[in-house]
Image (cartoon, rainbow, N blue to C red; front, side):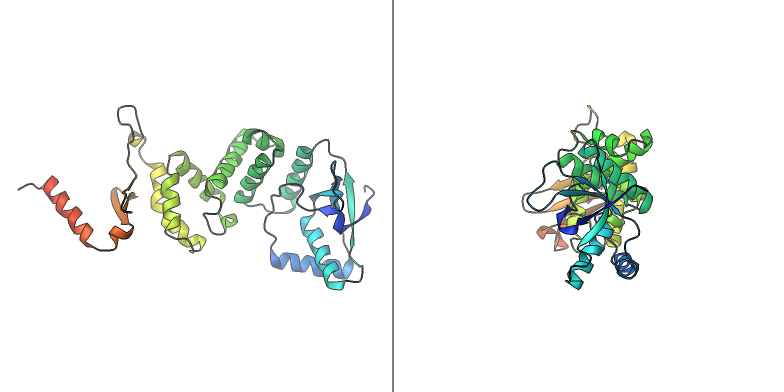
Length: 285
């Protein structure tokens, strides 16, 4: 085994890299903390020496966020100097992208990373300037992935970019759900998705998903309904009027629903007016 060194935990920047594990499962972390307290650390973490260290932080974490977090908790709990250092393998990646790719590869083996977290990591790497494009981030962090998998990972990142802070507990979304959201965004349904989620701001993910299903079904609509040069702006999926009235169309099986919302829709009188108008169109006197 490679030799390891002891490093003060206070000198390690746990977030020097955008991390793909954004949530640490509390129960698993508690079990790991108890295990380290009883028998010590079995597997050293991995770090690299920062090229631009600060007065306090000298190392960046590549892998071992849960192990480092457990040590931090134990050090704060004991407050006697124990667990203030942690065993670490000092790696020498050629670049920050290489270090990040190593982190991603290690986590792919050791922990199930959600599709949302995978997409968020790609987006964070792009925003941090580690990669110039989303394609470069996908290729750099997943060099062994097939073309199909890279396409899927890129789609995850695009969903995160469009819907971050809009979905409750997005890390619980399955790969199939992420792909449905991606298809809907490519179909031009972003505004409709955001409006639907805005109507359910405090709902849990299952409730939000149920509300989205009619919208997502439009992503699978007949391609003949797509916008064309002869029908610009069609199909019209949403109408927002100045007085705050919003009318959305939703697919329901082989039929359609018009959903009215906003201050003007609080009274059923507007529906009576609409029905009167429809009657004049289709059943003139």
